[in-house]
Length: 331
Image (cartoon, rainbow, N blue to C red; front, top):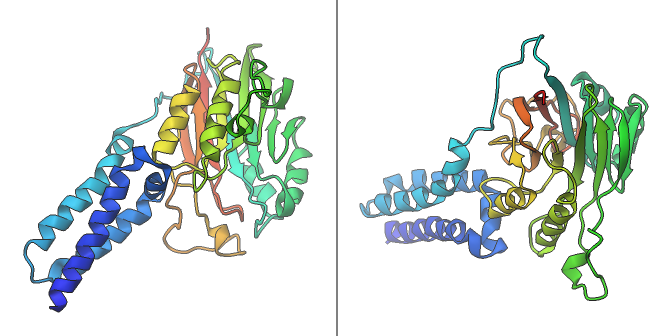
C-alpha cells in the first residue's frame, strides 16, 4: 500500500508540472512554471530518483515521459547560440564597446562596495535598474565617474561616449488616450539615449526594467507598449538591455524578443539570485553558485556582432551584472 500511495503522489507531481509547462502558451499562470524552469527540473529529478526504489515497474517509464515533457521546451534555448565573431584585427574598421547592465536592487546588502566592482568591468555604456533606496549611494558614486548620463524614474544610462539626445521612453504620439483601455497606459521604467560612436555614427541604447510576468497582465501590456515606442527609432544599431523579469524557456521572454524585433544575445545565462540576496558579505563563496534563472538580458540590432557575454561578479545585489562586448562593423 505504501508503494502504491508514493507512486501515485510522485506521478501526480511530475505529470502535473509537465502539464503546466506544456500548457504555458495558453496562460501566464502556466508560463510561471517555465520562468522557474531550473527549479522545476531539480524538483522532478529529485522525485524521480526518490521513486526508483518503488516496486511498481510502470512508475519509472511514466515519470520518464513526464521528465521529457518538461525538458522539451528548453531544447531550443540549449541549441541556440548568439551570433559571435572573433575579435577584429586592429586594422579593421570595427568599433568594439563593452556594455554592462545591472539591477542594483533597492535593498542591496552591499551598496558601498558595488561601484568599485562595476567600475572594474570598464563599461563604455552602463545600464542601471532599481537605482533607488539603498542603491542610491552606488548611483551617485558611478555617475561621478561618467561624463554623460541619461535618467528616467528608477533607470539610468551612463556613457563614456557623447549622448546627443535622451529621455524617458514614452507612448507613441498616435496613441489616443481618450479611447484608451488600462493596458494602454502601462509603460516600464525605461530611458533611451542617442549615443555618438567614435566614428561619428549613432546608436540608440535603452535601459529598461519590466515588472513581474504574473499574477497580473501588466508585463504583457508593458511589453507591447515598449515595443511600439522603440519601433519609432532606428533599430539597426539599437541595444536594449536591463531586467526583463522573464527567463527562458518562458513564452513571456519569447514574446518580448518577438515584439522588440531584436536578437537576444543573453542565451542560457542565469543572473538571479546572486549571493547578495543571502549574504551581506561581498566575498561570500557558497561553493556552488546560487544563480539559476536568467532574467537580465541584452537585445541588439543586426549591426552588432557579439564578441563575448557573461555574468559579472557579485555586487551585493540579488542580480549579477551582465557584461557584453560587441563590435559594430564598418559601413
